[in-house]
Length: 536
Image (tube, one colour):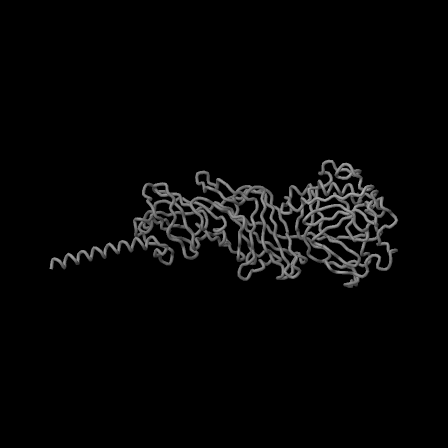
């Protein structure tokens, strides 16, 4: 009997030990039992329970600016030994409050700083991403992944709460958030459900993204930037039902396309480019809005006015020094317009009534009376005119020292959406600018054949001017060119006449030409249909 009693006692001790081991094992997993509200009983002294107490604590942001915890979220705390400890459990779905179970000792203080560095981040290091992605309109559940962060002070639980949790806390968010709701009432831009918003580019005069080493409660800010970016791109394609992007309604409609971007708080001057694509015409380009310097505070959602407008142009084309424009009495918008006869308006189009189709006596035909040397005599080609086009020498200064910048800005012309053009410095802002000699300060291009080319445009094609800079520049759209009955290169290239014949001969004249890869001034057949406008 004694032997049996001893055996029984040993078995009971073993069962008790196994029970203890199983309890410890279960507490160390992420499957810690919780009720439907995300509450966890305070049962194990090897862990400390930190409970969020307000629906505005974290991390999925609703359209109203309310934050909630989402699946996979964790908090970080320094324990009594100064070591970082991460919560063992995470929410399995979106929830307003949650009890986080944290290993380590938390007995020396009634207050601890809670860190939330972002989804899948560690300790107090913050990553505000340069590339952000929103799958669904008017949904901000991506902000935790791309830079949302914050901290809070956990205080010892009191009263009835102390029976269940050790500390309670609320997170103060330390990122700022932009909310864009782009719309456009311009019928020329809208094409039903065929026009989509594919991304938003946010440029700043200082850093708005990067890697920052410290969430700094002492100074109430994010500090220690080791990687800094002045550009954030929000992608709006690839989501279920939104493969091609978000719609662009005629009036502001948050439910249709509200977009959320996480940025570093601070005073920023922003240049925002909305990339739009017409799925029917395959035209894609940008509409730009600029926002003056403003202090974007942490823990704040900012509604950004997002009415998209595009400029409409009425380009008029000429053969060199012609008396009448290229499509005189055959304009694209004339009453009784006939496609294939009158002015074509898209690349690859043709019109049989081009200048010279009935003979070179047409007053729309280029000037053949001026030889290899000479200046134009008609309208804007005449240097004596107050609104004359630049001569060849002047054009070389624009090319070489005008700091040209390619920009895929959207615009409309002749009833269609187009994009692309060049920003060039105004004459008054080009040091050394002169009319009698070219940009080499040696050659008079009016009497000596020479060309100039600037390929630096290619390297600078992704650099964009802010509104404050644009006052020193003027814009030339890529209006393309007519060659006999055919229309070419609109949205890809621009061609602008000078007043100067080219000494090279062959009935040529100098023209400015450009595309996204470069800009130059060179000889061109006088028979081509280019723009003839004064430059600033």
